Image (cartoon, rainbow, N blue to C red; front, side, top):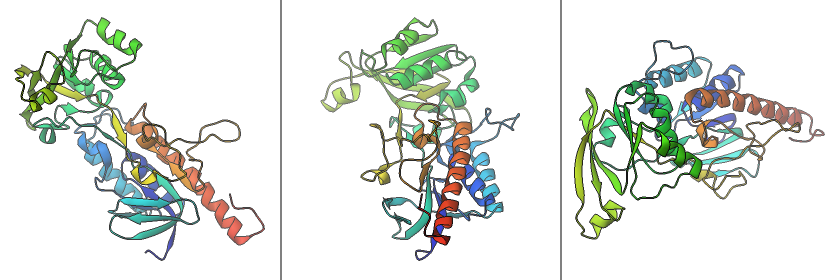
Length: 341
């Protein structure tokens, strides 16, 4: 395969990547989808999805991903387990070096590698992620009507999670490792003034209790009067430990976009690593990155919404933009007098 030039390579197999693959495959562009080291992305960590259009009874995150993959394969998309190590986007075709040593060449690249939620490292989080432990209140908050829940973090992400959860939960406790929030003043004020939201200062989450059958049933918190409990423990200081009964835990400490392979390229990233996109000549948004042939879809370019349905929408847009680009390249190859886009 290393000697062939693909029309389109889609990097990522979450909802955005699968949507792009469906559209590209239906356009007879024979897309190759690189599944990455975690096929399906973050949605596979969600047990039930109730806010994706067309599933009134809800659908499992893994099932939704599997259906999307089958749909893309039906139209001719190929899938390969692979992770991009480096990308040469300066020339054409674009060259991708994979972690397995393979080199791919493609006219167009759709970057749909997503953003990974930051985890705390608490005991029990691996087992309970998606079973009462979540990184997305908008996705899972409605499952916690009447529960007492914890939100871990002190920035805008944590405040947004807490305020959304307060619509459903009996109580929301924000757990922060120091006494001062990192959140913007307006977000912090909204959270402080909400009757259902409380704060546990100078406190960290140490362990989450429960099972996949019963969900989250409790959590162990550790605190120190001077804050940063884990650092104090490393210095040999004693911590106060307490186990609380809760029905859910939400991580609100942000996401890290999976864009390491684009660092040092001409694809522009913001200060947090999210891909920046271009507008067209009329000022309307596109999925173009400013580098010919490189397009973007999903959470990797979206630090704000990060929803399955918005990711799917940008996936279709990226495929349509990439299709137009490939067609223009083919026209220029047939008639070299025309300028390459």
